[in-house]
Length: 140
Image 1 (cartoon, rainbow, N blue to C red):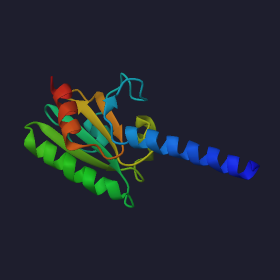
Image 2: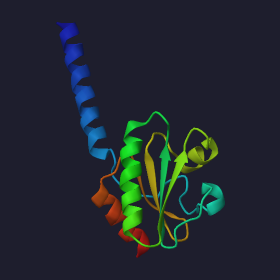
Image 3: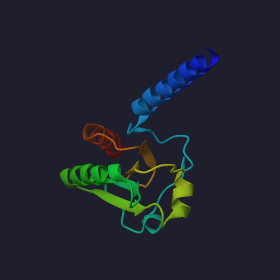
Image 4: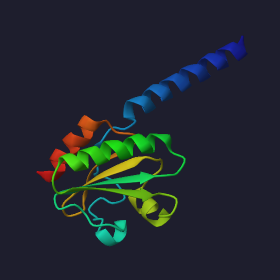
């Protein structure tokens, strides 16, 4: 009987964790409280020019399947809005920037305003409407 109780508790805990993770995955949340809080990312940090109005930064790895979908979504959104750049960074080759930005999984997306400050961030593949809304906040 004790084994069945332990198994039930473990299954319940795993289910709650899975639901919580699913709820948070890909959500663009405020960038405040990050390692970069109050800091700026520059073209030198990213290895590419920032967008005139905003920049979508994507941290990816070679083995990351959701990174391909994220690349497509961010590329489409950047193409839709003038002055917005999409920069993809290989997390494995830029561990210094990964640590500085507090990236713990890929894909991680940072939405930067024109000055390079993090306005929003998401761990996991974000939805296109959420990226567009976050971009609107960065441009305002």
